[in-house]
Image (cartoon, rainbow, N blue to C red):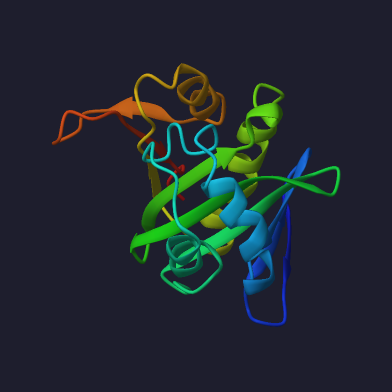
Amino acid sequence: MAEEKETPDGTTTLHGTLTRLVPTTEADLDLLAGWFASPDFVAYWGGVPLSRTEVAAKYVGRRRPRVQSYLVLAEGAPVGYAQFWYADEAEGGIDLVLQPASQGSGLGPDATRALLTHLGGELGWRRVTVDPVRENVRAVRAWEKAGFRQVPSETGELLMEFRFPSS
């Protein structure tokens, strides 16, 4: 089960079995800008490398509280980026991307379970969605391992959801 720890700025560090998710800060900008500038890292995240300015605006915590951004750590080293965003007070979505060398070792599903524990437990969400690129078979399988199921989409794009049990 994931353990949570609130940080001084009111964000929460999340703990999975294999991963730890720490809120991103301005100090992470160089790391994230390097990642998001890499075609391999963004292959299924829009497919276009992002500028440092775009990364600064979106991924270092400037959109809190509506979007919560995290570095995914494994054995203390940063291996990926995750975020959750609110659609309303009881549901929203998750986005997650791992460094190519860190894929396929169970880190994605573990980080996802840590997020789900926080979203369903601490925040009381009822439903979480993800929208992986259909051709990213590895990611689709990882989401399924974490408990997500495909659902119909108005746009025809792949949409998956996780529903928390009703109390």
